[in-house]
Image (cartoon, rainbow over all chains, first blue to last red; front, side, top):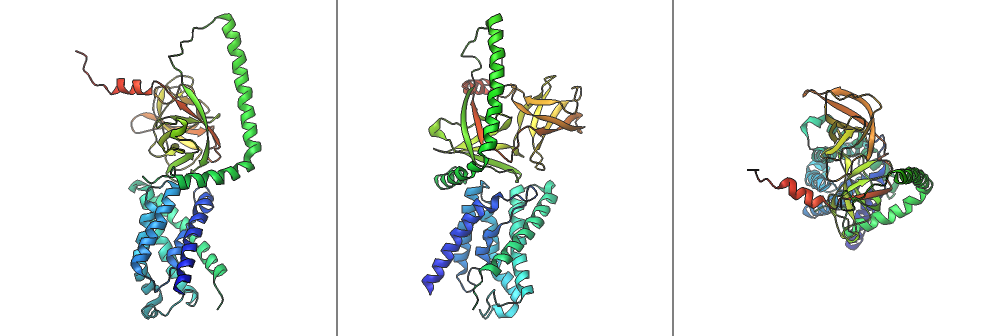
Length: 168
Length: 236
């Protein structure tokens, strides 16, 4: 069972990395809107899993994306940021039931799931674009990119959750 | 440190661009045929002028050296865009070589590994490239405001320059990286900045979203020029 979980997460890590750098980074919808689906790895990492392991893996995933997109570390920073905040956001979105380790993302109500995913995505994108653009005078561009890329990412994440959820 | 010129990302991008290139073969062929006919035309005019007045060409002067490469990763939607090409230090590519296509300016090499090179695109808010008005030689600097990947900004053009919409912009030759006269783009519109100089929107001849084959320009005298410019002895 444990081995199985490690295998699935490793496969997901590699799959999302390749999908992001080979396909999604080239979408450039309306010139600049790209979804960042790879944070799905951080979103659905087992809720009972080791928190420091998740932060380490998020750093690795972000850094790998950085290597492919010549972005110098901004993805690593944004990924570590949301990996660190994940326990607080889980508690915020799912309330008490998170404390009993009794939730599954496929079992919660749609609105709770949407709140959790939106918060994670928007925070990640805000950090990402602030660091990438890194200029106060372009704050409008930062907010615009965060909003549009964020909506794109949220839709894509919701769709992939529906597509790949195992019916049990 | 973090760049796509390393072995893993470089070879992965090379494989995918090999596949991707098949879908643009026809388009690339037409671009090459266009360039060939243009070069043939200029060759024939050169031959005629040589017959009339033979020019003495000193091979040690000027002498920019051109090399071909292929873009394996393009990027144009960020504020600081970088491209990756499939040639590196093993193919004698060096940092500070200029990069162009047959249609115009692309950028400057800013990092090389053994087999891959990275180019700082003109679509990068840190880029500053010397460029001039073709008809009057007034020069300024090309930069980018991060908005439209087809339009760059030419700043510090003096206000007395006879500027018109539709004028051609070329590289100025004041930089030691690009020779004079490489095409950049056409003036789309212009305004006057707070320092009483023109800010010109230049529509690029290149489609930066569809780059494939590029040429790298090496100036063999670059080191000598740099040493000379950096020496700060006072003339006494």
